[in-house]
Length: 289
Image (cartoon, rainbow, N blue to C red):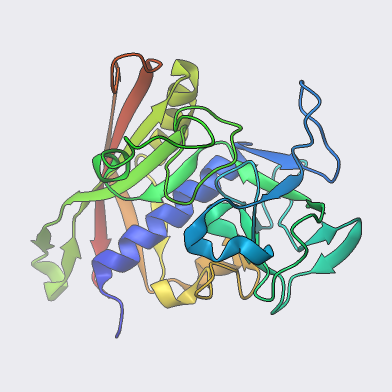
């Protein structure tokens, strides 16, 4: 079925914001054997404990991070490393039908399984903030069950695909309207796109909010959803995605009419760390093609 205009607008503004965050340096590169301040190998992927993933034979290996960066051509130095495979016992195994990268969940899937005692490492980049198309209350309300690998608020744990980890940015469409123009009989769609930013770091909320806010009074391309980025059912990128090659495929053009950025702090539940939050609302205007 052909994508509707609102779907195209939402995915396009998602791609634009993701690109802006990456070009602002909101990502971290990890190379094989890299350690953190405590000496832990953060390039290491560990066998998932998720019983729903049929992992008794070493099918799914999870990184310490919720997402992998998949965008190529980012004009920031050094650019993010787009994962192209993994090292199994120090032997590189490229992406293939038997080694599948799930970019959305920061993990690698071996459909045929591998030895559960294998050492699996990778070169990759992970975003500083996950960008998620959903209402934050939907993502957080069902996460009150104990996480065997740690709390949902702590970075650095082995992540479960069923949890949302902070910091995160949630994108949702708040409203949508139509505006007609007498001259030429054209119509414009005018949705409001909201970005809710949650983090334990107040400065991080400000920095991310400033990047999104910088879109004010600027135009952006509206591209059909089918033009990419393209993922298969496993969440693996089927062809390279470059923002600068994606833009010329636009079917329309949008304009950010106004921006409102509100900051506040809250505590999600007693005993949890304080969560700082910011909400950026973008009022858009997009001519219907």
